[in-house]
Amino acid sequence: MKAADVRKSAFAMPLTSPSYPPGPYRFVDREYMIITYRTDPDAIRALLPEPLEAPEPIVKYEFIRMPDSTGFGNYTESGQVIPVTHEGKSGGFVHSMYLDDDAPIAGGREIWGFPKKLAQPSLTAAKDVLLGTLDYGAVRVATGTMGFKHRALDLAKVKASMLQPNYLLKIIPHVDCSPRICELVRYYLEDVTVKGAWEAPAALELFEHALAPVARLPVRDVLSGVHILADLTLGLGEVVHDYLNETPAKSAQGNKPASRK
Image (cartoon, rainbow, N blue to C red; front, side, top):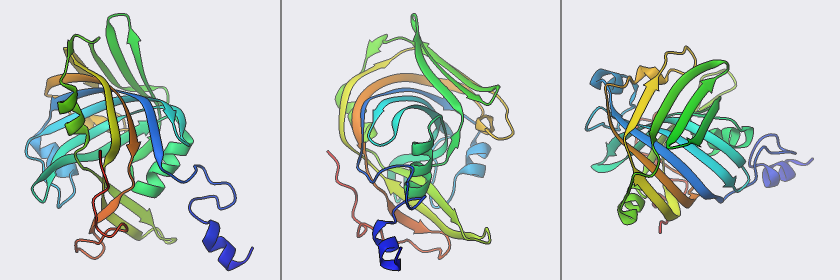
């Protein structure tokens, strides 16, 4: 294979059999259970990278079913998002993600910098309760519950919250294990259609684990439980800060925000 052929065909690894196709990536009937809780301020400060700021010690714990995802298939995900501000604008920092499918693990880490690790999350309806669990190997790491569709929410307000920017810390090592890429990445959800959204009483338990440390952001007070069903496209990212140069970075998209509807 000529060098020009390598450059032409290379977009992911392995070169001759990538783990995922090029985007865009469309999600149909994506289902969320999001339990918002208050945690310790010191715990937030210890984990949140500058220049992001957390106005309050709040965490959103998410269980997500993705039964129809372009290129990624049918899988489930669970993790933590910290509400933040960046340059005065509200958004969310994706702190941890655990899922059960190789393609979105590889694609999420390589393209955007999602902090994805292999585990066994689930989200099911257990009679009158929505039940989310996360197991890492044989160990239970998280259990979340909320009442099933108690009160409908304003779909326009839910959609507006989903259109806020999201932030990731993308780290790619050099061959000597020093960081070759260390960037703050911003991305948006696009073409969002909210099919339904509900609130109900919720509860969340997090358990200590050496390699799935969700309990480093301990639950002090559960604030809300929200259940959402939506279609959306996962937009590509833009670099907003380069930690190796310590300067705001120009986006690969010309520093323009992703188009949103």
